[in-house]
Image (cartoon, rainbow, N blue to C red; front, side, top):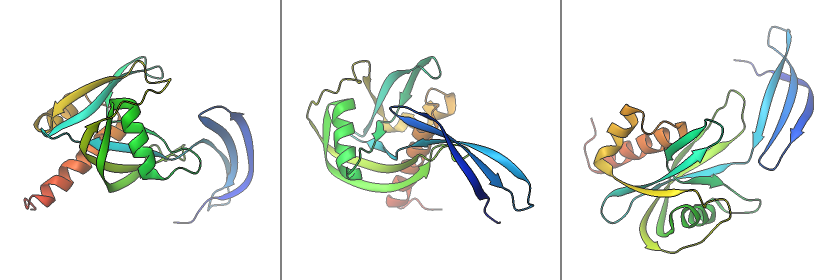
Length: 183
């Protein structure tokens, strides 16, 4: 597969969280077309497991879809910030817990058809209470869900955002492999 050659790039919008650019590209066939690309900083997505084998999820209103979603904690990596430091900060802000143990599980692009955002997936365990208030987290509710109920919540559509589904399924497979249930 041959890459598309960028002929020109035009910044259309620059906001607090995203930039939008339109690239004119040349296809491998020689045909020209455009690509609309949302530039977004990389983020962390966190599978937080407490001492009772509960997954810490957050319930928050998402204006873009007009409803509350049940999600794994996540957030943007700030300029110059280490991903693990971001995991600790975001988990504190969104759940009120600080992980003593953080382990990388992998990562994935959120919507590669039009967005640059990459999510680094981490497992956070050995949680201790550690409240850190952030200004934009006042409408986030903490929900503890037994790990045994996660698959059912995904199948029923109660958990319906891509990062949460991808992160939780990755964790369930990681746990299955670690417990020796491979096959």
